[in-house]
Image 1 (cartoon, rainbow, N blue to C red):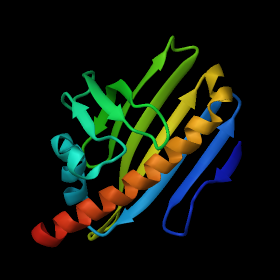
Image 2: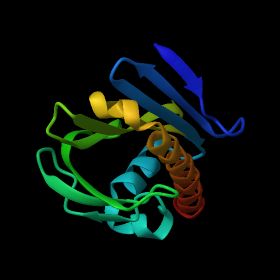
Image 3: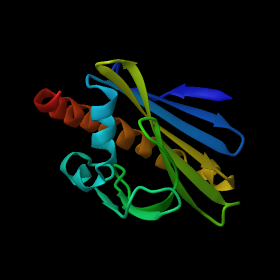
Image 4: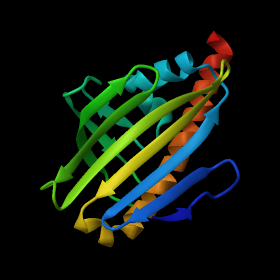
Length: 167
């Protein structure tokens, strides 16, 4: 597996892993707020428009098996409307995805929370792009990486500001 560091600075962590017809973006940011505060902010999809420039709209409920609509705004790209919820593990993970004729393209997006200590939570976004079309998606994946980095910073600021008044 080939690994490229797409981070733009020491605080903006993201790597692209490539193998065959699979590409995986893996980004992270450490948030100075307890896990429960970060989780509550993450699942409050009605408030995402206040802080999230990458996914400013979510319609539907975050429940396994539910189809939700999200509007994804990657820098320099058209807006996209996506997917279905695959898995929710409280305080740990939300997984969703979609695709096109599942053998041409399938994408799985995960938000993962890791408790560093009682005052610090690591937020990760991981996206697995699969299928023959990934060979033509280099530019789109790089723009998506910028969107992840921006969202991570926005979520960090939002969660830390929220914690300053409630923690």
